[in-house]
Image (cartoon, rainbow, N blue to C red):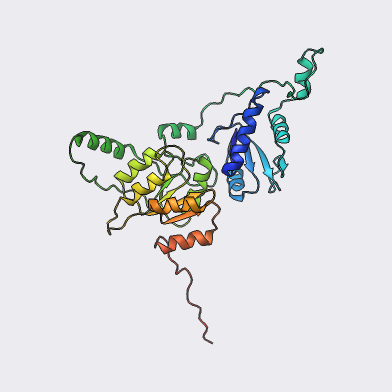
Length: 319
């Protein structure tokens, strides 16, 4: 099961509840990747997440949590959320019927008021890997969008630059590191572990004509920064080490042909004052919430000459 479009605090609440409810079958486990999740719990009030899931061809069944189903017709748990009701809706989606499980239980046994009713275990149906999944396995860390309708295929890192980098590291071992040759790459490096949020950010920047490399692994992102030159680096929330601030500092140590450092834009669920200070100390040029509107995002890109502000022709007021 995967959670889509929720804040950190909301996701933590859901995960804690499902861990507590794990003693009653079926056991629902929260995972980060939505591609092979059997169930998707989607924040219906997050229009970007709802639109992305609606356009995707995912095998999992969808349960919405919010004020409206957005015309999708998917099951909806209205807010304020009752977690026990969410559990019942999930049981209905996977076909668990409490009556069948209770009939199989001994007739003399009565359930305590604090227990969950017994149900049958949800069994996952094996499925043959799709062509998109096979392609992802061949390119770990660099994601493609071929399994999502209406979205373009993401460029993948070729094997030749990786091999060249590996040979260069062996030959320079024990010597003073020399500058790596600049390889032709894309304009923007997107560093995002979350599959859903990464796709949303990719689509937002793609429409400005920027060509994008996407890495879901922080160590790979550092390697790409060392081997290539990017005009802009976009960093989403990262877990573990190296963290987002270390990626930012690594990007700022690189120099473009004009002697300037790449523009670094960091995203977070909420742009708190303390996080904003940490991002500024790391060298970030902009620290934005994920819900930033297009006008403000456009101004940030225009400020750093990544897009043009002169999109409108002068008005001819002559008569």
